[in-house]
Length: 197
Image (cartoon, rainbow, N blue to C red; front, side):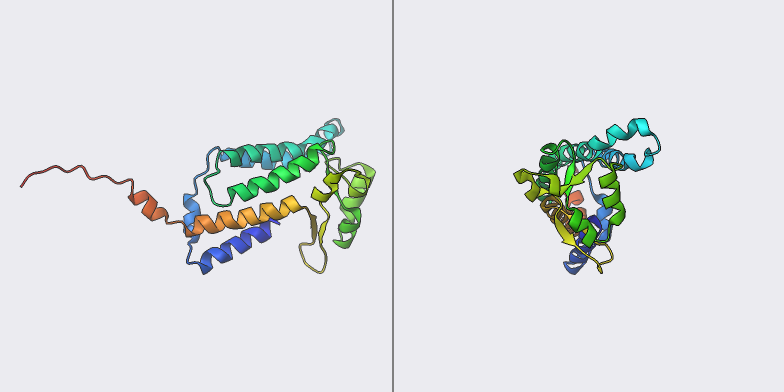
């Protein structure tokens, strides 16, 4: 849902006379953590040929979310950051309650046309996901069970946490596009002239 959230955020920002150029002035504390979290999350796909690293795959999703939680804690002054944080914490909670794996609905994946992922989960090739149907505790309500089916071109199965993350991203982009960066910089200018007539 990140792509959809980004597009909606851009549209709302423009509707409210925001500027795309404002995004060039976005300032995030510890921003390199974004790239570290992204690399960790995609690392299973990069190293899937190395069987001795397969056990690491289980922890990559949760670890990347932990890093992003830390990033957001350092940037709670940003619009949408608290909503993003709620979404990430909800996803992290369900992962930690299920042995570092995110439960996902197999039937939902089937409706979304994601047969390859179903086969990978069932065969054990993908270990950071597990079948929702095997989850017996209340965490199943925080799992990925909300289906956005075909014919939507970006069909998927998402969680409640993902919805919060999407909303948070929309608010963040909207907030940064409509922020008066020029005004905020002008307040830093001080005039020290003390000449006499």
